Image (tube, rainbow, N blue to C red; front, side, top):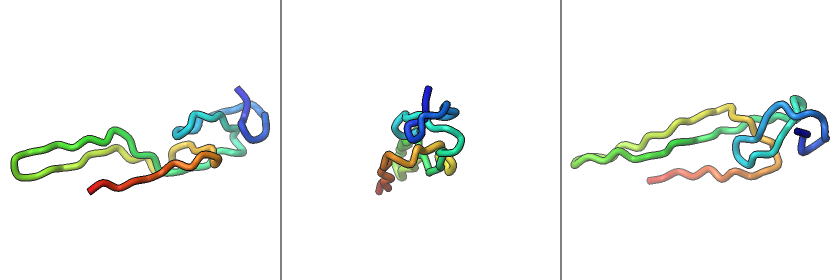
Length: 68
């Protein structure tokens, strides 16, 4: 697989869009996965797994949202 930016051999895949990137073009962004809500009679607790240094190609524009 080749890097989307320069055509060299890729070493990683963007977590957000699936594009391949080489070592020189890897960037990092926050990725949140597995969002769910546990509900109880009196409260609601939100759960998610957050990765602060997920592989990012730098070309796509992931949209981070907060829920209330």
